[in-house]
Image 1 (cartoon, rainbow, N blue to C red):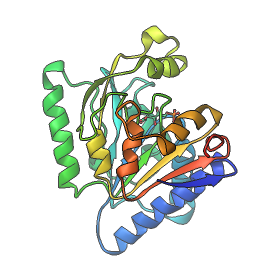
Image 2: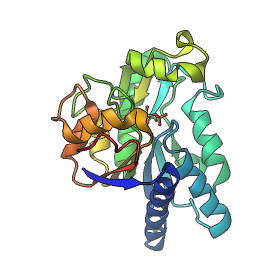
Image 3: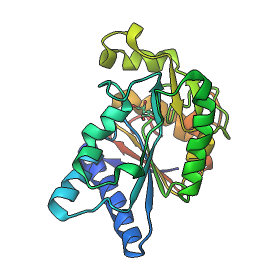
Amino acid sequence: IHNVIFNNSKEGSLEVAREISELIKKKALKNHQCVLGLATGSSPIKVYEELVRMHREEGLSFQNVVTFNLDEYYPMERSNIQSYHYFMHQHLFNHVDIKPENIHIPDGTVSQDDVQVFCREYEKMIKEAGGLDFQLLGIGRTGHIGFNEPGSHYNSATREITLDHITRVDAAPAFKGLENVPRKAITMGIGTIKKAKRVVLLAWGQNKSEIVKETVEGEISSRIPATYLQEHQNVTFVLDKEAAASLT
Ligand code: F6R
């Protein structure tokens, strides 16, 4: 794992948005699609803000971009303002020229009977798109990436998962109370993420410093699923000073 430490989240986010935009443009020159794996939550917001700015002010086009989001709460309506579907449209998709048919987000509305089939189909769509060229990640205090909570298998695929209590506590303010936070989610697996050609994980703030240290310096274990990233050949952790503070 390669760490890059910035003075603040803004500077780190600008650099990550620059990398993504270069990849999109490089692929466009060859008439190739650019397949992006995307995250929600507070960590990537400034990256999306910058991509939207580049679209508006510099003509960055998303015509050749295909996206697969990491996860969605389950069950969850698309129109719910807490849904990751809503989040992605609000922060990125509504403001750029991406083709609607190129947007993929796990569907929080599928029936319980259809979840497994949906997950298998999601994996298949990623594969058929040629795999993820770039995967953007945040990290939860449990060490989850996507919603791969402690106990997740290193080779796991997209599936339904039960959220860790800590994850639900962290989400409680957004849902106006723990009792309103869904107990489950649909998430890409560790195996799905590890197949991405390039992985960039964002972590900002002192809140993340302990889990960042354990992820980067600890031994690889399903206790902290993010440690599986140590086995990836092309992963960078983009940190601010506070998130990097515990690293030795
Ligand atoms: C979101 C996701 C999660 C978050 C993580 C950190 O799509 O997959 O793993 O990245 O929970 O969330 P924030 O960025 O809100 O601290």
